[in-house]
Image (cartoon, rainbow, N blue to C red):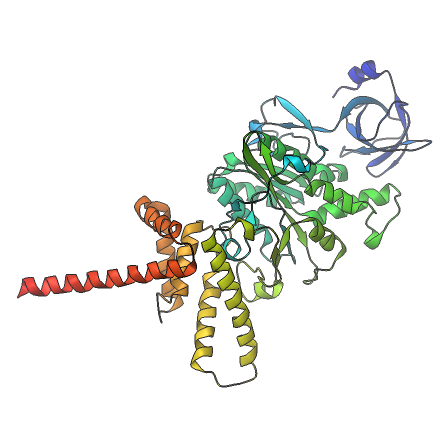
Length: 499
């Protein structure tokens, strides 16, 4: 933006009277409006935060402080971000500029305001389509739907980011667009995320919106809004979009800093009174929408940090009340070696169950019931009681299922093979085999599902023809019996020919 050009257009000029961090207090500009962009004489950009009786409050986006006495002028524009397919495979800042100047972005054809109002109720559709994360525990027990707002909550270093990266890989491989927002992160972390997407050949389906801790507070604050605007472009183009925000705890801290510097009255934990509105107006823009004659969605997965497993913090409870459920990453389970460390008893999905088929719903019902029994049994044996055969069976099955849910970081499993392998474990297909041997077989079958179309077709047929877990178990027992008969027949044939 050029200062002289906009000065000619508006004919209004202002002067900086005072500077407090990223906020400048300005005189002049009689026609100024809230959220309008302004240009300083050095061509740096700012945004009007509020209009006072004797000054205008301007948020600056410059890494170097604005000096007192600097000139500025209005632009008659709100903050806009470039949108388009040109952004796919790129790392950008909230302005839509390339993060790496050596890898520029071609000139976009369209710009959109980052503060679009949420779509009304008539533009929305009921969430009925299942979003596959590739994480077996989530897909079977705590399902997420296309258009859902699911909060990811837990202590630091409990695997939240690894889960989200796996979800992005799963959705990108299914052809959906994924937008990953990194708020106030290290450049090394941003580079690692990019390398993972490159390694898995999905970068062409991903847009990374990134800010570092060295960026101006105003730029960090705007990052999730810019990303949501980009997501809305792809939704309007008829593409299901996944938006991941890592993380809103950091975002809230930056906004609190801006508010305190702007002399706003602090509320609970020094957060400003409008922190709920700040996050809610972002969340409300996600959902499942009517686009032409079809449905398209923006699914949003925000991260928020908990302190020592406390779910009752201010920002945490705010976000819980404006989302459709949460996945709780338990530090205790993480220290026990569980990956992912999701606590199924403290996790909630309010609309996910309605996206499941009858088969998946029956599996989830059986699983929840059994895991509750397994947890109670584990507490019972702490009293030193003798173990009956029934209790031993419950413990053995529970241990197998717990280990079945184990997944290495950033690995994904297709939905139907998840269901099939679970049914094998539930039916005790491997009987008394060591779990290390069972795991080898599972990995082999998972690889066959990915690489052998005929095998995948057979598995898909079995799953699609089953309407209940009992139907699936019956088909598996028939398969097992048929395979044993084939082995016996082949032995008889060999003995007859030798005789």
